[in-house]
Image (cartoon, rainbow over all chains, first blue to last red; front, side, top):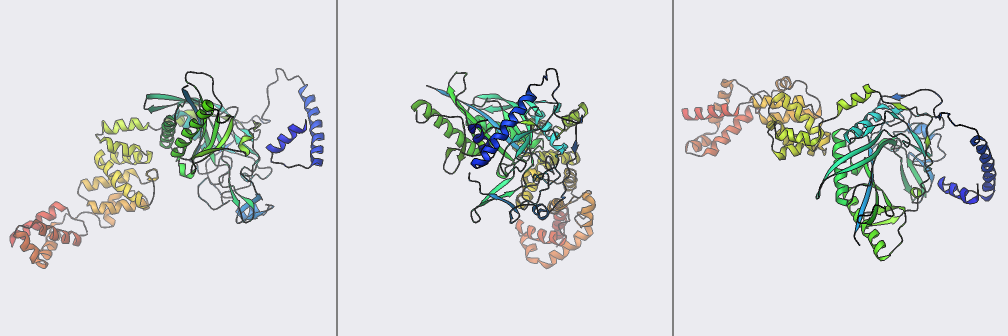
Length: 93
Length: 479
């Protein structure tokens, strides 16, 4: 992990970190990378890839529309809401 | 140097489902902000997606209409995407095993027929809508569209001009609407297109620098944008006016220009990975053939049938095949009334008139074709007058009428065969209007029409016009 990669990740994730946060994250990523190296060293030749823990297929539902929650109930949890909208910091296109 | 244009299109189509792709919220367009939202589609922690079966049905239908191979095991993946219109911070889409691959769309161009290959069709969720609020200097988020089901149809770079792009998009729209996969309404955003474009020296097999224009939402804008980009690329290569770079550009249709984008789309590091919360969808033979059986005849096959064995004019056939809804009502009506010409006239003239009044499109024609057939039959048997039949038709648009004859009887729309009742009314009309009688006798044909109109009004339209006319002349001649 270097600062260039970290700033790219910041951009991808729309983050604006302070220098202290950057240093903390750098240390975290360095540890994570070492852990990943240990995992990568395990011989997985001839081991089938496992994506799904449960051996299940076709967990599907019929196309029936239902209203389970009201907007007000959902927005009780919202840090900011206005006129029925969730409100987030301004994004400039 | 001569250049050739290379275009690939990515078309997003909203599927005609009642509910969203991974939750049961309504997928209907036009609700109040955040009225179709639940914890799953607003990205609350711990919520699990469950695939809407109808989405898979329609994905398969689209693939079959576009000559694709259907992947019998299809899976969903997460596409990292950090933007508030998708609150999970990823879009659930298909990357590793999309539902359809290797298709083909045949188009007609000024240079003759051409096939455009389809690379793949994948199912995915739509993003929500962001509104930038100047007053509060914040962005407002509406999740109604979040998780509305989409398919993305990715073509190979086989398109070489704006004309071919439009022919491809029109054909795609016709096929998908005909199969009821989507209403494909550009103006409502249920069909949108990303244009990938590059140019290269004619005959070269090396692709040039590619630019992408996202979310184009009208055929005219796509035509203008393609022409603009081809000119811009050509100028850059011939005159060195700018260095072409691989980038996403925004098309401004008002200004007629494209601009480089600096936003989310340029950061194309999506880091796809399989979604472990959505189990693979396995399409067995029974499911596959059930969908295969629902495929409609292609519009051109119907046109051929209508002008051939059914004897309609080219014009009538073209009008009907412009919409699957018209075809369905037409075919059901003909099966009851037996007259293709009459059924076509009723649909193209009378039904369209009602739809226009209601500001509805042909695709929204939702009357029962069998009932329309019964009505046409009653008119042809002189049991209901044409004027009253129009009234019954208007009632059909308000609610289904299963037995049209019973309805006509109940509301007094059946033509009277009681000649004595007609005679009485004719006698009264003659007595009340001696001038018209005298005029008719003096050779003024129009005077008869005046008397005829008065009698028909008295009879509430329920008289056989021929019978009424005969009685009227007979009674006048007695004077």
